[in-house]
Amino acid sequence: MSKTIKRVSGILCAMLLAGLLLPWEGQTGTLPHEEPSLFYSRAQAAWLPWFGEEATRLEFDEMYSGASAYGLELSSKLKSLEGKKVQMNGFMAPPLKPTLSFFVLTKVPMSICPFCSTDADWPNDIVLVKLSEPVTALPFDRPITVTGRLEIGSQVDPETGFVSLVRIIADSVE
Image 1 (cartoon, rainbow, N blue to C red):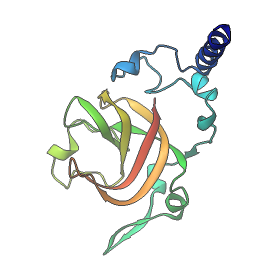
Image 2 (cartoon, helix red, strand yellow):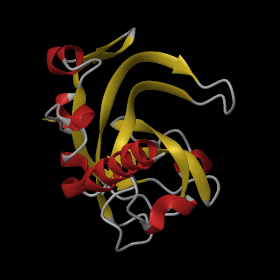
Image 3 (spheres, helix red, strand yellow):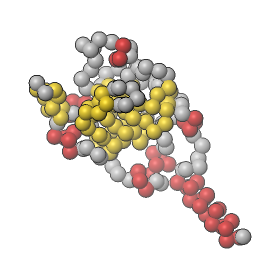
Image 4 (spheres, rainbow, N blue to C red):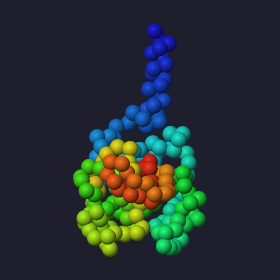
């Protein structure tokens, strides 16, 4: 019996050191303004082995090399980062509902929902950010940093019908 208790204690200590048992306010699915990340702090994430990949900075003006009759042309940098960890700065566009499992990252703050505007106002430099857990929307004028795995290519979300060309599967939003 004492060997089992020692093993369980050892596992719990390892999880505590890795930050897996530390409480954080975001675990209810909301993101308070003072919380640094949707998932883990950088110090906690440093203990987790799968967070070891270094993120490459990606700017909105590095995403496309031009446009043609076929649409936007993806830049060579964007193509080279497909499937890799990237980090982008931007703003959360006003969402359609207060709690969301995805949002649109824009280069500039938008005060109205981009889906409620005309297509002439819709920015061509946007990125769809998918989240593992639903969160409460942040103020539209608050700059954020998104880190996660980059996906490219046209994709239609089966639930919402939203079409995206560039997506980030978020590890963190700060």
